[in-house]
Each structure stands twice: as C-alpha cells, then as structure tokens.
Length: 245
Image 1 (cartoon, helix red, strand yellow):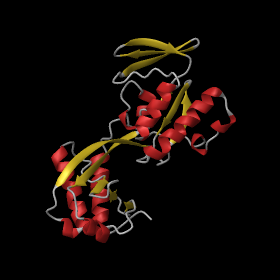
Image 2 (spheres, rainbow, N blue to C red):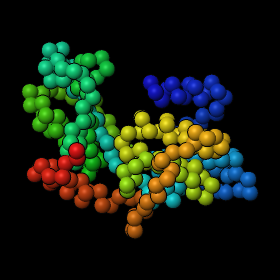
Image 3 (cartoon, helix red, strand yellow):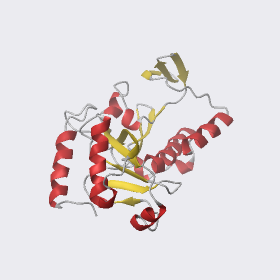
Image 4 (cartoon, rainbow, N blue to C red):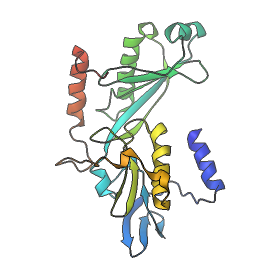
C-alpha cells in the first residue's frame, strides 16, 4: 500500500516512471549526467541512486559500501482466533534480541502469524530458507508445530558497515541507502532529504549525512564473509552470548 501510494502521487505529479529497466552506467557530463539503460540512454541534471541491497556492478562506489543481506518471511496457515489471542494477546509487532533476530506479528486481518528473520541467509533455496524460519517459529511458539505455511518470500536488505543509514554525495551523485532492514521507515525520509539537497532547501540537513560512508579492504560488493558471520552469530545465539539489548 505504501509503495502504491507513493507511485500514484509521483505519477499524478507528472513523473515518468519506467519499471524493469536496469541502469547499466552513469556518465558525468558538463552539466548533469547521462544514464545508459537496457532500454536506451537519457540525460538529466541530477542523479539519485537508492538501489540499497540490489546495488550491482554499475554502481561501483556504492557497491563497496552496502552489504546485501537476505531477509526472509513466512506466513502460517489460518489460526483460530483464540490461538492468536493466547500467543499474541496485544497483537503487536514483536522483535527478539537474538543476534540472528526474528520479527513477527499477526497478519493485518488477524488470521495468521507473519514471521521473518535472518536465519537461512546462507542459502538461496526457498524451501531451506522457509524451513530455517519455521524452526525458529516453533522454538518461540511450540504449539504451532505441524501448522502449515501458506506463503514464503525473501529479498535483499542493504546494510552499512556502521549499521547507520546514509544520505551522501559522491562525484555529484546523490545517494540514499543503507537502511539496515528498516527501509519502510528510512527510505521515504532519506529520499526526501536527498531531493531537498538537490533543491537546496534548508530541511536537507541530516545527521546521517555527517558520518563517513565506510567500506572495507577486499570488499567489492560480494559479501564472501557473510556465511562465516551468520555461522558465528548462530553459535553465539546457541550459547546465549552477545545478544542485542
């Protein structure tokens, strides 16, 4: 609904939206930029890159600074109302304190539990990802063992090395990215900050523009270290060590 609402507002304001069109390169011009895409080239006075966890090799500078980390979500089959009332009486969104933490809530219609987490990030196999999350679900709600799943989906979130979102400018290109798993909250706000910077408005100021956008030696956008980090976090969770406050 949020995405649809933003899209409708943009189209109503006269914005041309071209979907499923990958940008393959951005070239600086004397005044503005040229964008090469799969459907041709175009020019614009300013550039904003907000690709986050889906940053590819066309955005080399950003790719070295954003870590794509998978996030998975499953949804249970319909549950009796009394079961949901017993398991989640306040019907709130919940997040736990594991290193590989889970986040879950009743569905908007109050008929099932929607359950997400990082467990299963070491594989791209849909069934194995869902199985990892299902085990976490049963650990928290043992009485749901045997309940079927109706939906499972996953995608990439974009993390920064200091776990802070960023609004930045590099070589004249504006960046709004690194939402660290909270893009629904951060993306619209930091996108607005990037637009305000381009327009020269006073409300463009943000503390997230003050921190350096860090990279690491030997990191070029492929998080080769991720399986080791996830494995280590899993070990710490097993022993109850190093959990987030």
